[in-house]
Length: 566
Ligand SMILES: *[C@@H]1O[C@H](CO)[C@@H](O)[C@H](O)[C@H]1NC(C)=O
Ligand SMILES: *[C@@H]1O[C@H](CO)[C@@H](O)[C@H](O)[C@H]1NC(C)=O
Ligand SMILES: *[C@@H]1O[C@H](CO)[C@@H](O)[C@H](O)[C@H]1NC(C)=O
Ligand SMILES: *[C@@H]1O[C@H](CO)[C@@H](O)[C@H](O)[C@H]1NC(C)=O
Ligand SMILES: *[C@H]1O[C@@H](CO)[C@H](O)[C@@H](O)[C@@H]1NC(C)=O
Image (cartoon, rainbow, N blue to C red):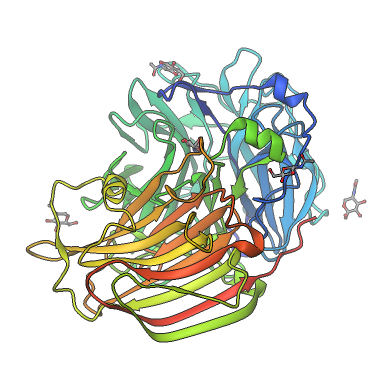
């Protein structure tokens, strides 16, 4: 694949879970769509996260000196329905120009929906999109689209050739669960491969298809991978990562000493899971390492609101970037009143952790261009019960990066090996429940007297062999308003604490707190809707409610400016 000219698109689709069950379907709200929002409050609107000016959004993407973002968008309302492919472009992943939608359902093969897909650049330097169309028989088919004018740097117009669909769900493939083609990759034999998400009964599957010319596709004898009892696998993403270093790779890179990552969005839980493993190219099979499990107990990109994400290779900076969709945690009625729903997480660079068991993630460096006033702190002690204010920045719109030093781990509480569920553990031991080492961390989007706050914090436990670190992003006290979804999101952080340090970075943007623990080993995104801690009335504190005194080794915090998003 020609490095330097990769087009990458990906389009996501949203399903609304009915009765919290496994089955999902698109739910349309015709009544709400006909309402004009009466009071579009901007109170919780994010400032530096991407969202279109109004209405429903989800989904990311990239291209050739210019980053492209295609997303599922309802031009008529802040609920799911009337979905077209919205299209925005950027030169830096931060400032965006919103263009006319790129694709509308219009042909028999996509008349009931132009759903999620991905793009690939052919060696002739032509981009091609593969996407799922819901056809006139309500079958999920795989189609392609091409830019109408390659001289247009923004690729505004796309055409859907008449020989679509490229492939139908054949016998043995569930025609109602066959969607979201990945970016294609090519091996030495010259054949392209692509995976499509699916299920058969309760088995999650990524079907593998192969082609020499990108037009004629045949199903491989076996799927690239599958796992029992995981339900539908949506938005599959499959890519190589180097064993060491932060450099990203083109999906068709043929280097031998790499690992591969397979990510799927599990419709049953609505979270994105990945495994690290080996792509056995001779057999066209992916085998997860024994340190990575498939399914609900697996590794997650983010232990909070984050779904239908995709990565792309950015040849201009030799990096792989992950972009996920972050939904709202309020009600559909609130979304109609706000006039918008859904944001994109800040794009994250991803690479393999040196321990080779998991990925690390970090906000793209371009985000620094939005940093304004800065405050600093170092060697600040946090005694038991302390909460000290970090003043001098806009606490509702900030980037904060802190490294804590733990002088002694002796007081760490014992860890019960039966505690597998981090979120349940965090629910049980919130930020105000005293401990040995921790809880310590940040009260973000906090009201002056802590009637409201979103606590992002660590707690350290010990086993007979090692330490277990829990990172929580607890929304339970985030708002005085009732009826919101306020989970105690949490994940374990795979660090050995040999250096007695723990770092935390949080991006705070009015109704979102996006946190990166342990240098990006464990990430958690929470959506919160404070009533007191808004705009200039939001505060930021560092706290410690553990018996052991913790030191803020260094803290840097910035007010964040607003990017240009037209
Ligand atoms: C709009 O909503 C905001 C926040 O709920 C409220 O403060 C304001 O008074 C409302 N405005 C109107 C015109 O109803
Ligand atoms: C293609 O795009 C280029 C650059 O924007 C423009 O000059 C040209 O007129 C376009 N061609 C057509 C047929 O629209
Ligand atoms: C196929 O998918 C549909 C929609 O999710 C589901 O209702 C049905 O049970 C699936 N059939 C099989 C065999 O997996
Ligand atoms: C996991 O796989 C590695 C090699 O990849 C092997 O050395 C190790 O023994 C395996 N561990 C278990 C528990 O199977
Ligand atoms: C986001 O919203 C919350 C609250 O309504 C749901 O519980 C989640 O399932 C939902 N997430 C996705 C990916 O749809």
